[in-house]
Image (cartoon, rainbow, N blue to C red; front, top):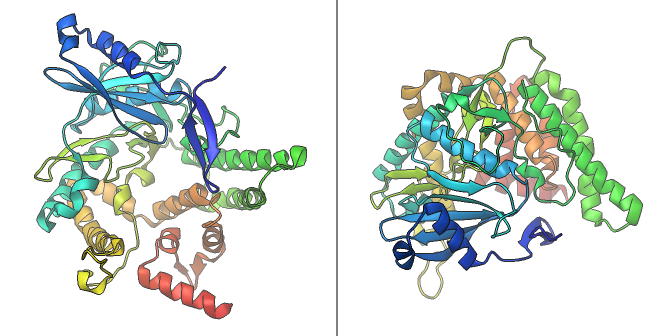
Length: 443
């Protein structure tokens, strides 16, 4: 039976594709029914396609008084992904002051007229910060960063005794409101890392987990299992790409090494570990702002979960980068301009690197005022090393990062000085140029 999902490849990454399109008339019909619109209200309403992401298509339901969003999802993790996102949105709305979409209705099954899982939710006003960033002045950017810290501290304050995704109840097709955010149940993670392949490991290794150590060991073994599956495909049919084979073999070896070293980073302990709710991607695209650059909403909660405190006490994803850049901002005159006088895109990249580097200390000063514990965990060298270990597992199956992870694992402690994996991965432009020159000289 065609479930609407097919995997393709661009030569490097596996890409999900829709084998059939949702019928916009059916999308409209389901939305109007869920909204309980009258015939007169339906006549004044319109449904239109808006955009799509890796796994979703977004439609706007325009009604006479307000708008709504209908998000239709590919079955990359049937039922679980939808259930978890609905529960997470409710928990965040109850446990914080972060503006998030209110869920009107949903169906966590594909057994409906649309043929896919869907969520109907409130339309949030605002423009993605990605589109506004280069138009904002510096005081607006620093003020925005300071306000963002309040949201992150609120998430950090939502504590749970297990690591996993949030869920509500057991019925996947009924909206069961939470009384308080504490009523949310921690269940299996939504394993988006393994969505990018039609080869996926067993479904019993996604938690929930009692400790960070359990989670990371399970992650390492999942990567090993996936690597073995890829290598077994070669043995069975010989159809595997040689680069896939090399990557699988390297990943298998490196994850075994990481597994053997885990005691140095996560020794076994008897005391209970606590976790906090973590947004997986606080990026410029997922933050909405008004015309003044003020925060209006935080979107895209579909892969959020309760995570270790060292992971939640960290920069938002758009601020992660090299710790050092040039002391002065880049100048447009120093970059190439086309025949129309438009400056090269590299200028904007370097400008953002400069701005984000100088915004990080502003972020930390603001968050220090709201949560000394957040800063204490962020600055703790033990937690920083644990953060590095998890980062190593995240990127160890990336052929481009293999060498850096290997070097970090065996050379991180040199002359008594710890060299973090973060610093190894996120090099400044000057460091990258120096490394390229050294490599060229070696050749």
